[in-house]
Length: 79
Image 1 (cartoon, rainbow, N blue to C red):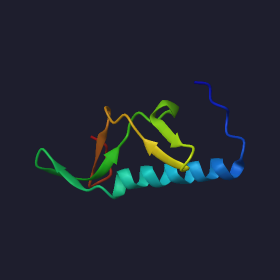
Image 2: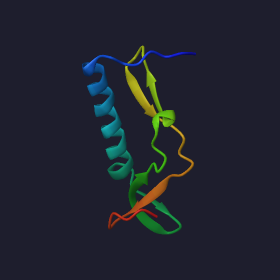
Image 3: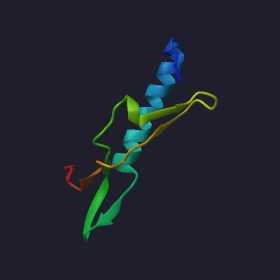
Image 4: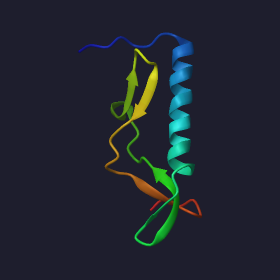
């Protein structure tokens, strides 16, 4: 399948906004415990175009491929 590049600045702005929201949610909105340690969120660690999916009909962005995910500690270090 061959895709055409996005030429609308409004569409690019919406995609960029959704990407930033997704990354902020990964880091700050997903507190969890792993191996008896508390974390504030996750780091994707493999963010590239292949791992960003866009539904052109709905205009929604989805991040995929979490194989290299890291954990943000409460002092904002990645483990």
